[in-house]
Length: 125
Image (cartoon, rainbow, N blue to C red; front, side):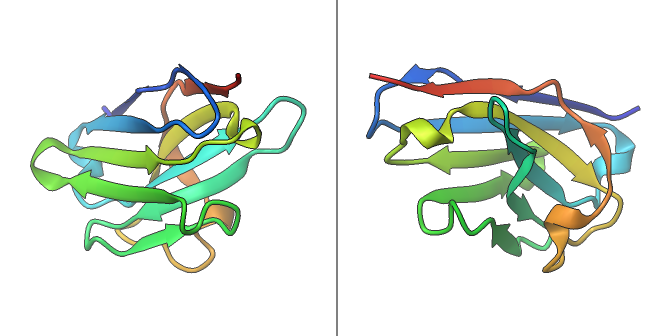
């Protein structure tokens, strides 16, 4: 049994910050990489970031240098720190478990085994 629960989404003004959390549980996630995806209204899902259990990190081009992914191994929790938010960051953000312990350069095109229910981020003045 694998369960992913996202939290931290909120309404925030442009220029503000949020930290999203993904709490993962279940034996199957002990060595799995975890990725963040988002889907904005009327748009295709987009890969945001990925972190492996070895702490290697990857970012989508649109968020590189602005968002930071990190993990706390002892609690199986992955975080996404989002700074200087803009309206185009508005989306539902999902975390997902990979089928292996690595992300890889093509992490955003790979299959993922389990998904959370998502947490909404709205950036508006």
